View (tube, rainbow, N blue to C red):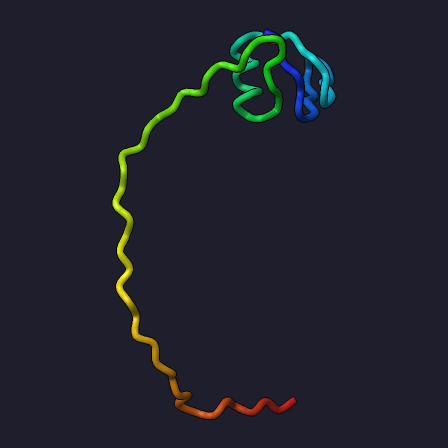
Length: 80
């Protein structure tokens, strides 16, 4: 499977600079594309699997009554 690198990759197989086209196994291509290190070249990209999450109701926030808080003591004086 042909991919184009979007990040630099280096390892035992060599160095694959950004923009280089590589022939790799389908498993390796899938892993690199899923990690956003490469994109498919020459064929349409496979559709990603969509997992629908169950709808969750939005939490309802209750209004909070705001009031000023008066300090209870004077700040301590530092001596230095």
